[in-house]
Length: 156
Length: 351
Image (cartoon, rainbow over the protein chains, first blue to last red):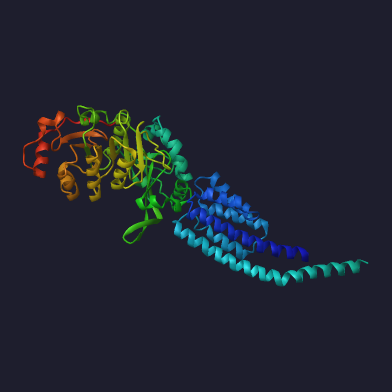
C-alpha cells in the first residue's frame, strides 16, 4: 500500500509535467499554426502519453462526432476521463477544467494568455507535488515495508 | 465546382449540418417551395427565427410551420447561437480573426455567415468580436445565365468588355451578376477576381466554392487596391473583376489597371448615378475617365433587373451616338446628359 501511494505521487508529478507540456504544444497549434481546435487537440494527443493522451483524444473525438458541440462540453468529457484515471487531485482538475470554459471561443492572444495562465498554475501544482513526493515518498515506502514486516511477524 | 446545386440541396448538405440541433430540426421540415425561395436565415438572440425569402420574410413556429406572424415564431435561445457558431467556426474563433474583423465567416459552399455581437476595438480598428448575439446565414446563389443580357450590352466590337461599373442598392443581385459575368467572359479571356470580401467566388479555405469560369484566378481576402496591382504584375489578366469599390486608394489602382491595358468591371452601392456622383471618391474616379459604362440594376423584376446602361465619356462603338463628345468637361452635366441620352428598356436578368 505504501509503495502504491508512493507510486501515485510520482505519477501525479509526471502527469502534471506532461499536461503542462501538452498545453504548451496546444498553444503553438492555436497561436501559430491556427489549426482548427479538433485537429489541434488530436495533434496534441499524438505527442502526449497517458493519461494526458486519453484526455485530449476524448475531447478531439467528441468534437469530431458532434459538429455543434461547444468545446466546453467536449472538454468536460475529457475531465471525466481524467477523473477515472485517479492521477490528478481535485485542485489539478479544477485548473484544467477552467481551460474548457474559454478554449476556442476567443482570439489567439486571449487563448495564449489563458493557456499560459493554466500552465503557470499547473507548474505550481507540480512543484507542490514534487515537494510532497520527496517528503512522503520515503515515509510511505518505509511505512509500507514496516507494516508488511509487522504483519509478516504477527502471522509467524 | 462545375455543377450548380439547387438551394434545397445546398441547404441540406451545406447549411443544416451546421445549425444547432433545435434549429436544425425546425428547418429540416421546411416545405420545398420555401426552401427554393430561401435567401437568408436569421438567428437573433431572444427573437423569432426568421427566414428571408426572395419574396418576403417568414418566421418558423416551434412546431416547424412557416408563419408571417413574428409573435408565433420560435424564439432563438443562447444555446442555438452558441452551438451554431461552434459548428461554423469549428470551435476555433482564434483561427478566424480576419473574418471576425470583417464581420462574417464564409463556410463550405461559399455561404456567408454575418455576425452580430460585441466588437473589440483597438486603435480605432475592429480587432475582434465576442459575445455573439446574432447570425445571418446568407445562402450563396448561382444563377447561370443571369448576366447574358448585360454581357451583350457591355461588349465592344472586338468582344472585349467596356470598363463597366455596375451599381444598385444592396440585394439587387450585383454580385450574382458579376460572378456570372466572370464565368461567361473567362470562356475567352484571362480574368482575375479581386474578392476582398469573399463574396464573388465564395472561397472556403482558399478554394472558390462557386463557378467563376475556366480562366479565372481569384485573389481572396485581398484589399482591392493592393489586389489589382498584384494581379496585373503576377497574373497577367485581360479583365479584372471586383466588388464594392469606393475607397480613395481604389481610384489609383483602377487607373493603374487601365494604364496597363487591362479592362475592369466593378460594382458599387448606389441607387442611381446621381447618388454615386455625390461621393467625392466616385467623382474623382469618373474625372479620371476610367469607366465607360454604368449599368444600373434593381430588384424591380427580381434581382438583377437591368434598369439602365449609361455611357460615360468617349465610349464610342455602339454607344458613340449617345455620347456628348465635344462638350467641355463638366462631370455632373455630362452624367446628366448621358443619363438622359440612353435609357435601355428594362430587362430582367435574374431568375
